[in-house]
Image 1 (cartoon, helix red, strand yellow):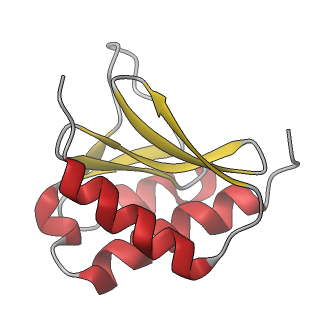
Image 2 (cartoon, helix red, strand yellow):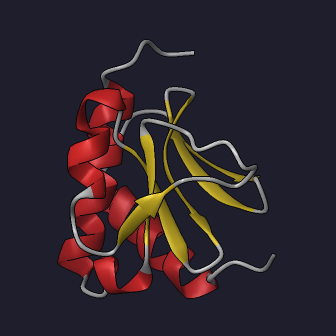
Length: 111
């Protein structure tokens, strides 16, 4: 599956502005993931943004507009959500989602 190069560029630029430690961009799961200290924070799959929100914020995040369950294999991944393009149309919205993923991933031990 092809992924949205424009979204990747937007995400890359916004992530760099936030300057997280040990940022790595990696091709994975047919898309691109952004990892900090070895933990994935967010990524792009197709036209959607993947955000790691953690299990505590999972249900609350799914109640927000333009979100859906992250399920690529028939087994939904709790703690991860997908945001459809309308949910990150503005850079402020995209940065908010990216920051949520970064904040959660930075709360985890480094790998």
